Length: 510
Image (cartoon, rainbow, N blue to C red):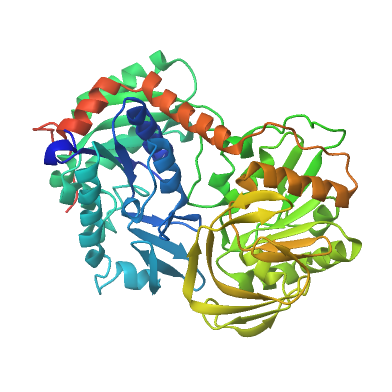
């Protein structure tokens, strides 16, 4: 099908037997493969639960995974691609972001429970998908968790609930590296209701190590048991992750995080310690540092490890006051104060910037009232109900920089030297700008200043382009699909939908 001439574009839902089966990677890979074929393709995820988010050019907040999938598709990200975003907070609640704007906090019981609020989200979700299908040749949708979570099926809007509402064919991805992939694929199918099974067109095996011929007898038996084929076996490859949604454990699989640091361009390496604060958000900010040859990035939560680092990064967090208490409980607040007194570099980003200030007034996020910060920057922070969402550009350290802002806290700076939207005081730096270190010239200038303050003979390597590294990573995902999936069958599925008459696999579910 084509979105041209008023016709609706094709679609496909990528589901998974589990979280981290590879749905995000497969969705991005299919988007890049189709974009290279000249098709206008868009990613879609009905509902995301993530602390890693991004701001579109028109000021909407969406999951970072969908922003990266949009980059894979070579289209501008929009709120249509992720109409519902849940941002976990304290006390088992999440902020609900609808069509790019925060609309309030909700407990899991309220979201999934008797009030049926989740079902009310299906209408804007389907409308967003249909709008994308009207303007694109194909929309590749990503599911969440497993489609066979039978306790949640009645209120599902992201897996089979979406597939049935939009008549999408479904491909289930199984992670063979975990073991039990055949049982997982069969069991996922057999736990779906007959109407849902009618849309499940086949399987994709992910993260296989070894000779694929050893797998073929199992794939053939699975086909006979379910009446559904395999659409390919994707090999295990390091560094294929994109900006993940589920937490630090997954984030460490990205290319720049997983690869060994290249040798330094100068005489010394530069050691960066990142504090894994509670409710850490947008920790992808440090990816650009790790991409630099000779920069070694590690997550550290021990005071003695901070003493050994040349730069300490306090990343963003959805719980600034909670993170502040965590730093104090672990002795990390004292370690940061000692670094500041010794003139050793510290960088705070967003929530990390806020807690480095003198005072926080929070009646919105934690409702803790007035709380004393670490006092390392001359900044007072007051939380506002309305969230700041912006894509700022500017100059710092003599170089152009751009980033994005996502925060309720508004900072009043009363001293120091201006630094992006924040300030520098001694060797302590703070800004609300996420993503600024992806600006190559600014990143190199910042690292030169850090190296000087740390007394290191570190020289940033010339010519490192972070955007080009991202493109290479996305092309690898496209290659993975093109070389190891049955692309002819995949294209037919996207354009024509699920085959008619797919057999029912008992017992099914209500």
